[in-house]
Amino acid sequence: MESFIVSARKYRPTTFKSVVGQTALTTTLKNAIKSNHLAHAYLFCGPRGVGKTTCARIFAKTINCANLTADFEACNECESCKSFNDQRSYNIHELDAASNNGVDDIRSLTDQVRIPPQMGKYSVYIIDEVHMLSQGAFNAFLKTLEEPPAHAIFILATTEKHKIIPTILSRCQIYDFNRITVTDTINHLKYVASQEGVTIDENALNVIAQKSDGGMRDALSIFDQLVSFCGNNITYQKVIENLNVLDYEYYFRLINTFLQGNVTEALLVFNEILNKGFEAQHFITGLSSHLRDVLVSKDTSTIQLLEVGAEIGERYKQQALSCPIPFIFSALNISNECDLNYRISKNKRLLVELALIKMCQITHPIKVEEQSVPQLKTVQPTPNQSTKTEEKPVEEKKNPEIIEKKEIQEEKQKEEIPLIEKKVSENAPKFQRPQSISISNIGKTEENNVVSDIVQPQFSTDNKFTEEELSSKWNEFVLNHIDDTRLKSLLTTNKPQIGKEDTLKVKVNNRFQENEIHQLHIVDFLRKELQNNNIRLEIEIIPESEQTSYLSPEETYKKMTETNPALEKLRKNLEMEID
Image (cartoon, rainbow, N blue to C red; front, side, top):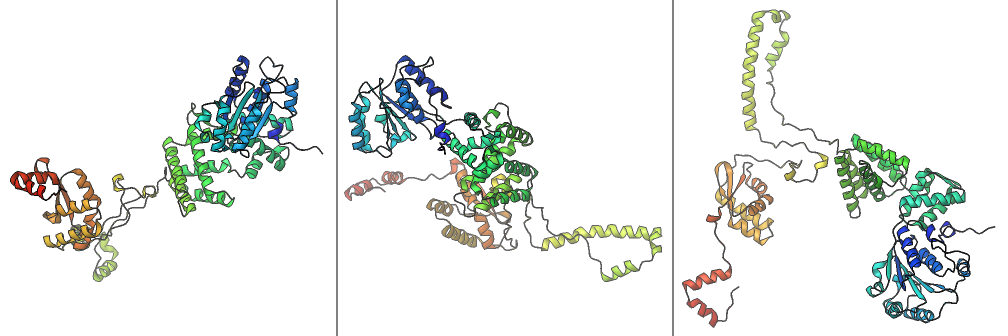
């Protein structure tokens, strides 16, 4: 039985031309070979699985090739290329710095560098995961890396460039490898699938490419996994089932549900997603990505940022037509806020459900009906009146005189009703009318013209109070509810005076002090304690010309010494300092 070779190794590039997604770097390396401008040290850095070590091997193979092709690729026919392909070349040395990261390992390497190559021009030393070297190993490597023998070339590869000390970086030519794009990944997977005789649809390829996150090695590993699961026919449904990826269909359904304002349907769809084993945070981040894709589909100039298959791309375009841009912005903001708060939330499911409810209310806000205070609409008839009305003969209704008298009586009754209502309303306790609120506005301040739905308790307006009572309750509030020393001083200095109709007049020096007093809600405290709902706070800003200037201790002492010069002499004799 023939042994199986994973696709990542079987289809590993052997020439610069076959490297996927790194055209700029491979072109630079080929031009360096062409012009014979080879540096003694290179640093290849970038994400995992993008071709760093592969390019290092191709570069080492090419510079030792005896018969380069017209486009400066290795010939694969000379003895040097054959020995490299058979993995028996003595000109190329690979060191894993993750397991050989000590000073002794680097000293062994530097001793080996002195030996010239047995075949070809250069001895190439590829050090993978170079960031794993210890500080001592880095320092031991510096001199050899800066002045190696003419035949030695070092190629360092790392995924974490920031961990390499600056003295190493300054001795190398640095090449930054990019993540492989979704398009390049899909095209390479198509080639591999055709070579393996596997049929796979476009949407499935797109899911694999996005799942690999720019790493070709990861994409090929996923491909092998799916071949084992599906056989030679890979479909989109089998891919999302095997990789545990949330289907696009759920997100398209949810957006339509948000536009319709259907909270019930949105919660049911979310429950269905949870029952399939998906994590709520994975769902909310996927929803944010979907909203982003809908947004970029609104404009033909940004639709190129959409990295999906052609079929799903058309669905995004259709949904983008029905989504207003303000709706997308609001939904993105809600989903992003939910994602940020997910880790600290104790009820994670409720957090996501609230986000879905808010999205449903963007276009269809739900408001509580305004509740009015019950009022006296009609005067209840007495039992005698009720009996007489019931016993009236039918003939009376046809008599013009009776009808005219009845109309006069009804007009008189209408005039009496408002007087009765007014009298009743004057004696009845006053209630604050609850204003209509929207769930989407919960948590906003009064600055956005939204009031709380909690009605404060109301009190009788007949309870009068004296200056002493007001001063006592004012001081009680300052002592028990204010911790800031500056605010205590402000409220103690600016005590209120009783004006007309229970209005409290307070004088302050500026608008900042006015806002501070308003934010303290001291009026609610006084209404409750003094049992008077008519209390209002009127804050007056004193003109600058009338304001009392507060002197610092130094200024106060200076004025005192002007009045009594002997004070300064006393201070010096006692060796006192001004606080």
